[in-house]
Image (cartoon, rainbow, N blue to C red; front, top):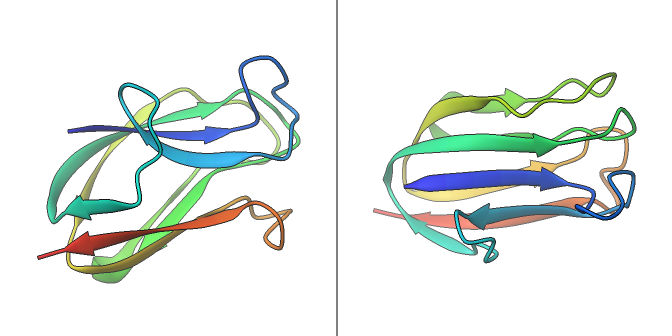
Length: 99
């Protein structure tokens, strides 16, 4: 399954918005454990997207640039957090992965 880690919005890349979505742009709140392709939609140098959680998952874009690359992640049961490192109080979310 494809996932998209978005920061900002298409209309305003610097907007204080962060989301983990499916390929159709729908927010993801729960997922089944498994292998995923995470594509970053980080179009701004003001924010970044970081996903951390069980199994040693810690993937992120750099704050200083933009990034639209993809990485493979294996998600196991537990709670994963996605956050913008410079703005963790306002740009943060969670996804629950079930076994």
